[in-house]
Length: 92
Image (cartoon, rainbow, N blue to C red; front, side):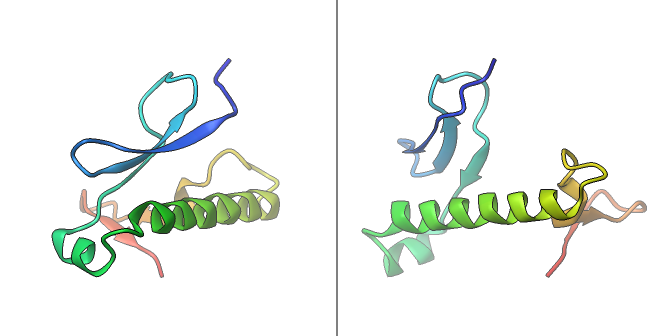
């Protein structure tokens, strides 16, 4: 059974990932800041990533509560793929 504890880790390449604390599986979330954005927030990247992840978790919980018919399938709530194209469309 996967661990319910998660940790935010900054990898040597500068990418910030959300991992299961037990190290099982691939990262659940990957965040990569551009070089330009790094110059504007050199010391705050982990805090910003933490806030982004927290907002995502809160939104996922809220959407799953609203979608009681199939609470496990949140993919369509965030990204809608055009059937004629392999490019994802971001919904705002």
